[in-house]
Image 1 (cartoon, rainbow, N blue to C red):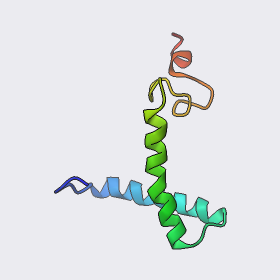
Image 2 (cartoon, rainbow, N blue to C red):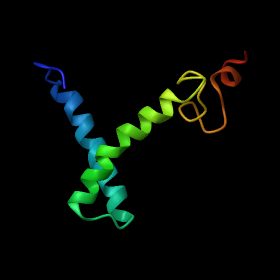
Image 3 (cartoon, helix red, strand yellow):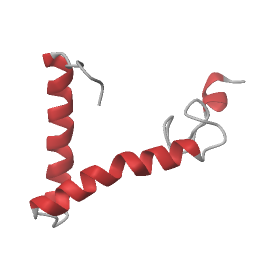
Length: 78
């Protein structure tokens, strides 16, 4: 948390929409207990951090972020 930081209403709306979509996907998968949803929401940033910190190419060369089978170099023709 950053002291004094307050997101813009537009940024906050994007976050609320993303959380709503994630909740809908979890609910469709049978995860309906609010505590379970809170737990998954808390774990996701850690999983993302672990992926990013252990990926040699970082986001720029990561097939996960740039299309499942296409690296940045393949797309740019390098």
